[in-house]
Length: 274
Ligand SMILES: NC(=O)c1ccc[n+]([C@@H]2O[C@H](COP(=O)([O-])OP(=O)(O)OC[C@H]3O[C@@H](n4cnc5c(N)ncnc54)[C@H](OP(=O)(O)O)[C@@H]3O)[C@@H](O)[C@H]2O)c1
Image (cartoon, rainbow, N blue to C red; front, top):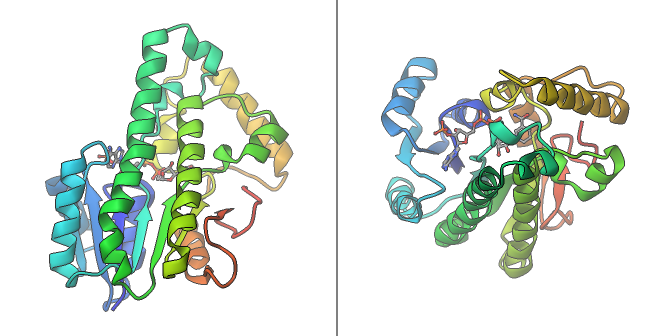
């Protein structure tokens, strides 16, 4: 009876993880969200499976994560097989701004960096620490961080990527934290690693391209041009369904024995990000 905890399960990729994971009637799927009532309604109307449990869990609120770990233990009997750390602050307002653009409004720059690091780095480190006792008792012992290709140092250099700084640097910090967790826990047989889901048509992705200023629009076009040059086969965002299917296949395939501990790969299971 595999058990899963997925953060940021209210929409986008997180909600799609709930849908695909709950297809196995033996699975226990726990979604952590900020808006429990609304998500429960959405799960019941759009998925309608009793093996999905929704708990309150805000990555900016340690107490809510602690309570979610306690409630998860009650549902599963004290263990968890897979943690999928998917929730993130995507920082729509700075998606197409360079660090220099952002610097024109220093207060906003500080707010964006603080929020991105609080949610994406500190929130996930708390999440991993709080759920570790449950993962230790699980069978699969896999902790997966959903990252982004644009936090890969080599890709950023290769395509001269120059925007979304608060988001990309927070995800790069998270990748490193995941590698450190691997350093600490691989001897206990716990696999920590990071996966980029590709460019996916979710709210997070499409909202960032709405209501753009002329300058941001030009940056967005420049970015998609760089993606096209990097991966000439790239035709635009994939669906959440395709992305989650690929990511799950990478998750199931990964193991400490294969050398995946602390690694950072794409939804293709490689360092090809698109
Ligand atoms: N879509 C892409 O192209 C893409 C590309 C690369 C990486 N990713 C990564 O994939 C993951 C999912 O992205 P997505 O595209 O599905 O984004 P999305 O549609 O914007 O969904 C983001 C999710 O994160 C949740 N969240 C935000 N702040 C949170 C907090 N403080 N505590 C708990 N949950 C919080 C949101 O909950 P609310 O509903 O409460 O806001 C929502 O469920 C993220 O880690 C993202 O970085 C996505």
